[in-house]
Length: 162
Length: 149
Image (cartoon, rainbow over all chains, first blue to last red; front, side, top):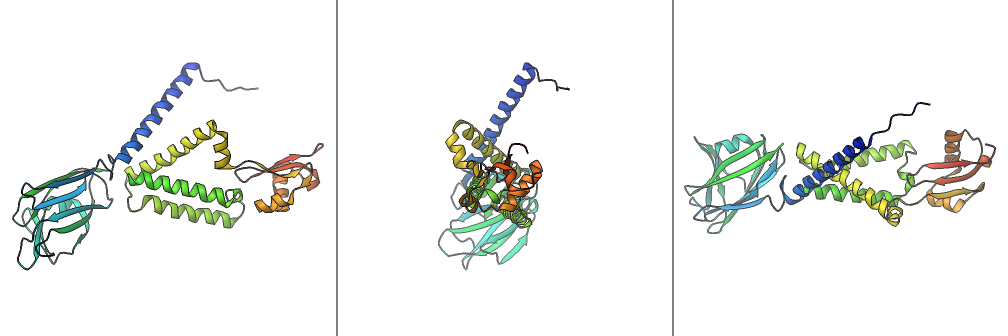
């Protein structure tokens, strides 16, 4: 009768250690995911605003490749007559992501040397919320700028997981 | 965060559904059951992945399911009552050669299925050759042949 060779005590100890280390790593990954370090979650949520508070943003620090992500912008007041807001998104942002939709829908869109400009009709004399749903097309850092009309520039960044 | 929560919700929902629907749903009895399981797996995948098809999301979901399964295995090992709650226990359907019809009805099993299991495992030809028969927690039917078989 051929009995397969038994694992030595050192091999069994090594196997147990690999098992424990692996389980610990998996648990840490899951806790990180729950906390929002690998995508949406409490530690990922970030709110930023310009120094003059005319433009505020709410987004996630960590996003995932080609997963939909909402960028919420709050503009303090219309920047154009007739209740229109001019929203400017830096060119690298528009080129590096797929914008699924902008809510409210822009009435016009123009391309400039550094920014794409969207004219959006909003409620007059009240802070307006604009929601941009996009999906990142590349891994790694995503740095871009947002501007309401001629106001201050808001610098935003995300890290895109594969 | 939502990936982990979605994975957990779907996992436990499926656990409860299959636990309540009965053990025979788990064992591959007919083509219909196989089709049902295939459709459920497709629907489950859509619910868990949603619109996030990134590698990171897939890895998190896989880890969530595997670690939940491991965690439940540990609990089952340390708490036998939890194991019975989660998986159920073996149910005897033939005792000392006598069929227990109320249990067979409860588990939705007929004599043909018992004979099929007896033929497959031991080459038995009739119910008289069976001493005991059980339905296991995974839905399979196990046979203890009568002496001399």
